[in-house]
Length: 172
Image (cartoon, rainbow, N blue to C red; front, side, top):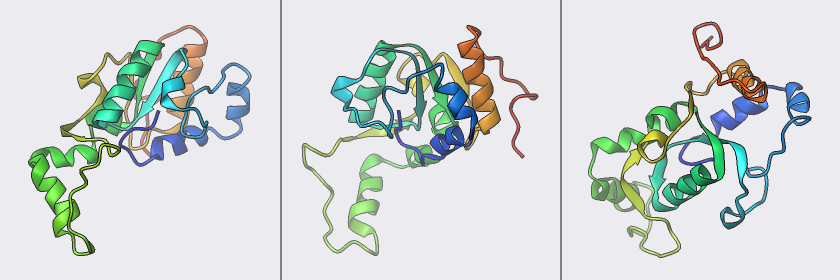
């Protein structure tokens, strides 16, 4: 699942390169930004992987639904783990963020804060996943290294909870 993040974590997942062919021998990707399934049809899964933090009411609902439908929930990347860049807005009042984005921005032609029921409402603060639901595994990094993601997934496939440490988490 992709919430408020840059999709860098999804790119790191794809950076496992040809190992993805080995992975798909053992897993089915049932719900993802690259699989066209609507949230209302979200399947029950063994492992749910979430990139990004929770910024709006739709994301909060979707995350809670995924938590109910998965056995293991992984917070993938610093946005999911800590809130990272999207949570920088937490130091300001929501009304001030909206005003700056929609009314005061130099490129704004029509100064109007969206107020349409189709547009999800921003939460007063951005939240890392564990502030909303129980998270079973945190994989930090911005983005996490592909080898670290591979390690975590293969450990889960082997029936073990991954133990992340300085040997399998690196930032070079």
